[in-house]
Image (tube, rainbow over all chains, first blue to last red):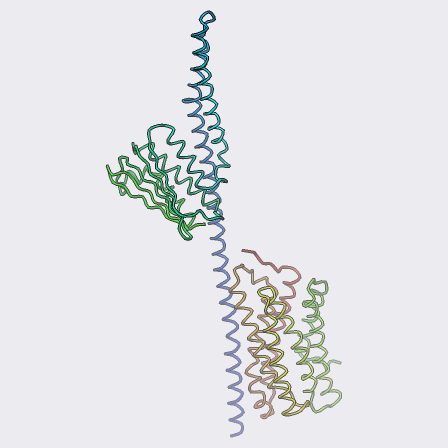
Length: 264
Length: 218
């Protein structure tokens, strides 16, 4: 009887010890598996950061390209014309007719002043990299100036809400690139005459709405999806900073692009 | 001389030698103290056997009662050091362990005096060590950083301690019953196996500490 009791105590101790020894094994396995998953998550996160940084770099490059295109067009169409006209005016001055010459000199002076003004505007554009340092609102102002200068568009720009004191320069840059992309689309394809831009700062979010009265298009049309790399870029860029883009349009009804971004 | 060496003592001595080789130039005081702690373990084991085999004492429990204090001092210091790398309030966890130990140790002494083994205290503090191990694992999982745990010295130190203290809980709980049946063979085998796991893990952690410990920051 005593022996039976001894055996049962020993069995109890043995079984309990075995069970208690199994627990650490499972815990160690669990930690190992969980840790591997953590490593995978961190790698994915690092990859996302790389993609984000690449996108920022691309946006900066595109902004510079856009600036150079604007400068090229301005030099050719505006300043080149003004200086050519100035040269012609000065060349047509004849010495004996001083009264008439004075009129031509005044005209040449006027043209030179206009050229200087245009050069100053170009100078501002050349500082494109610094454009974003003045804030999103200021940068949008510059983009609107450039659109309005063509004389083909009437642009209405409104800002609602207070711009946060501490913004996010990367987000500003992406939002600005989306705006440039949208304006490019409007200019190239929409044949619009009016463009309305509305920037709204809300609690922890930002909304940018760009509306035009152009020809519009079927958003679901396969040809748009195939050709519309610009639209794809807008969606991709909004997504990369945690936001979304909603593009609504119909033929003959213009286009409305809404960008929602968590901000700052 | 060989009478004083058992398989347990040999394993402990090997671990002590590995710790001396790997940790002697370690930059951390607590890891260096590990050498001293293992020396105390070896000394206690050899003296314990010597008391019975050579000096013919009836019991060596009093020696292990003294050892419990050294064990508490070192294990708590190590956990305090390990918790520090995750959060700064680890001292409260350690303080609660010390209070638990003091209370249970006093209870044991009041119940049966100094010459019997303080098994209640040993059981309580072993459970506390298990809690510390689990808490360390929890902090490790919660941390955003990725740890290469295969080469992480603290992880293997805690794993060894967890195997030993958790695995020996059954023996601690049924200690009185095992003593009463006058058969120590099962307890000896269990403790031997747990010791092998404990000192293997610890030796590996010392090797990791010397050569390969790494952590990647998120």
